[in-house]
Image (cartoon, rainbow, N blue to C red; front, top):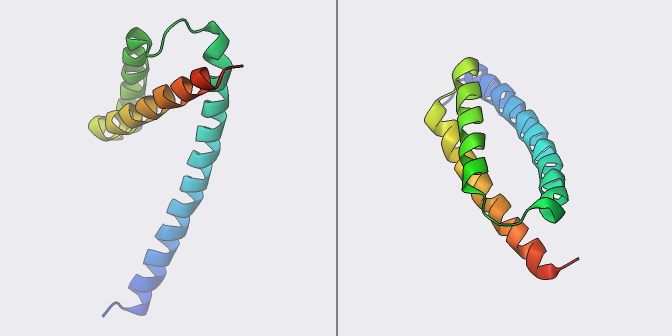
Length: 95
């Protein structure tokens, strides 16, 4: 059984994670609006060169911030995959 101190610490850490999750969701919403704004300017989906550039950029940032590079790369590969799917749906839906 957890001690009261351990339960409090767990609760505090979970609240901090929840706050970060809210911030991430807001940032993802902003990113998605920008992805949507790209549509008129993109001739093809996907853009492999740009995706490699994004992965390199976030990999460098992960290294500078002390994050595990493979974790960040994995998250961003999923984000890029979701962005491609979103762009394709938007393209099919038309103007």
